[in-house]
Image (cartoon, rainbow, N blue to C red):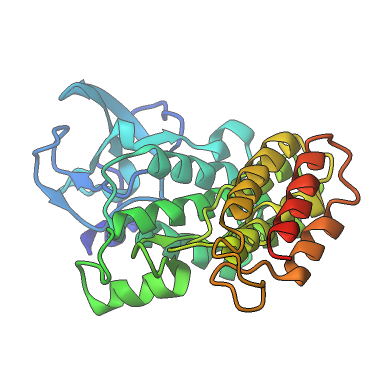
Length: 316
């Protein structure tokens, strides 16, 4: 815990001119006794902290910063430079919480070696900022990147039915993500992205949020006509209902057409009436898809409408 106590301690050195304030973006950042990655480590993890440094050196293949606020005459606090970025507070002369924490999220999302505990750490820190109503901590872009980080956390949990760690990890996963009942993978459900989109339709990244939502794969196992049509209802239909002229409307319609074609191929394959078929075609589902396309002007919708007619015909 000495890292926290050193915040109030005097700097070990005080050159005349300070360096730009650094913001720690990596969950692995800790104080080192000297500028070397194998040097003695101490104190709490520093992610999310500002570092006021008045000295930097090139060592161990990178720039290191002497963090004055975390150092004492007895214990220097050297921080590995690649784990930090220039603080937006220093650049903008005012705290820009969104920019600083976007840097943290971009950093952790880009990494390929993040442990589940690191995702939990960042999530807890962001939750505290929002709870305290820190300005800029609840922006649409920050929320979007946050969801993307949580999705990566699901991958870090592995494909097993239970995570390798403790019951606390399991509880965190269950409270933040959904489990695919077939593949045993954790993921962020599409509705989380749609809720964010609906609350922020006018922001510059709204289309990107919607495109991410539509690409969340709907979990399914053996899937016949009724199931395939329901996949369209859950996965592609929400996009064209909200964005009938969206930037990705052709791609979304094309994917729906593939599913509709598969539904045609499977429809009442045993040639039994729809009510008793193993692969029925619910009239209400067909009607829902057909009605939802009314406001869509893209010509690609005509193929879906044709396939809906065909899927009905197969079960008559």
